[in-house]
Length: 287
Length: 256
Image (cartoon, rainbow over all chains, first blue to last red; front, side, top):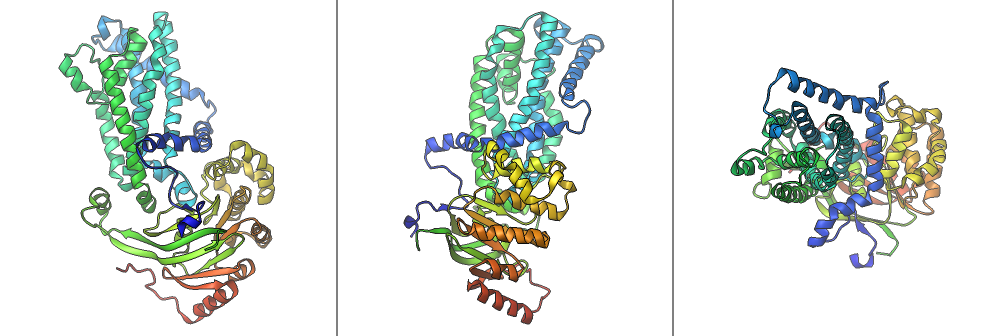
C-alpha cells in the first residue's frame, strides 16, 4: 500500500538515510537545511540581548575590558604569582584572559543548555520546530561574544607587547574542533536537562570548581609529561594551552593536545547528536 | 487508496507515560529497555483515516478526547506510540493560541521567526510582510512585543502567518474561537478558498463552523474514533450525544 504513495512522508521522521556516511553527514545536512531558521533565531537573540539598555552593544565590549583591567590590577599589585615562562605580570594577565574567554564561553553554554528546550518549549510544542537547531544557535551566539572578547584581547596584546605572533592565524584550526565539542555537549545536556532538573543544578554546582581544574590561573606547560597527560582529562585544557601557544608564545600547538582535542570533539559531537535525536521524541512529551 | 491522498493515519495510537515518582522518568530513560517505570495513558487508539486533496476534515470531540494530540501527530510534533502517520507537502499548523510566539519579541520579529520555522526564506517573508499585516488587521501593533497583544490579536497574527506560506495542508486547532465575528468570517473565507488548492484539518467546538466548512468529520471519543463520515451527520450525532451523555467527574482517568 505504501508503495502507491512515494511522496507521502512519515510525519515524525526527519530527513536522512542510513549507513555510516549518512550518520556522519546528517547533523551538518540538517543544519544547512535549517540555515534560515538558525539565522533568524541568532539574529533575534543578538539584537534582543541589549535592547532595553542605553549603552546597547557597548556592554559587550565593556564587560571583557573591565574583566581584563581587574586581572591586570590584581596580578600586578595585589598578588605575586610565578608567571608563564618567567614572563611579566602583564603577560600573566593576558594568559589568564585568553583562558577565561574559552572557559566562560563553555561554562555559559553548559549552564544554559539544560534549560534550552524548556526555554523554547513554545516553539517545540506549538509548531513544527527542528529542536536540534537550538544547539547551533547557542553556539553562534556565544561565539560572537567570545569574538568580541578576543578582539579586546588582541588589542591589549598589541598595546602591551607591540605585536601579535603569526601563529595566531592558526586560530580557525582550533576553533573548529572546539565548535564540534560545544555542539555535542549542548545536545547532550539539553536532552538530559529536559528529562531531569538535576542536570541544571549539577552544572551550577560544578562550574565554579571546574574553573580551578582548568589551567586558567596557572599553566600546565611546566608540568611533568605524566601530569600534563592527566590534565588533558579535562577537555578544556588542550584548548586553553593551544590558545596560549598560538597567541602568546608564538609556537605551534602541541600535537598531542591537538590530537586529543579532535578525538574528544568528534566523539562528543556524534554521541551528543545521536543521544539528542534518540530522546527528542520522549523529551517533547515531558516538556 | 487513491494517489491524491494527502494525510494518512494507520492504526495511530498514542500513550503518554505517567510517572508516579519524579525520578522514575530518569530511570526509564536510562534503563527503559530492561524495566518499565511508568503506567501508560492511552490518549489515542486505533485511529485510521485518509484525507484527499481538496478535502476539509473536521475533528470534533469533547475536552481530552485526543484531538490536539492527533493534530500534533499529523504535524510530526509528537511521535505516535503505535502505527504511523504520513503526510505530503508543507504543513501550516495553527495550533491552539498563537502558534508558538515569543512573548518578548515584536509581532514583526515573530513573523520572521515563525516564517522561518515553517520553512520560508527571509526574503520571501519580507516580500509578504505587508500582506500578512493587512490580513491580520493589527496595524501598528506589529512593532509592539506580543506580550501586549490581546488574545484576539494574537490569533489574528498567527492565522495570518499560516495563511501566507503556500502550505499544502492547513491544520487549525481551535484558533478561530477567540477571533471576533468579522475576523472569523475572513478566516472562513480563506479556508474555503484554500480548499481549492490544499487540504484542511480543522478542530473546532463550533459545530456550525464544522458543518459550514468541512465535507467530512471525525468524532473522537475517549481516544477512539466514534464516528466518521459526512460532516453534517457526524456533527448532529455528536450534538445529540452531548445532550444525553452528562459531563461526568472522572473523565480523565489513567487506565491500563
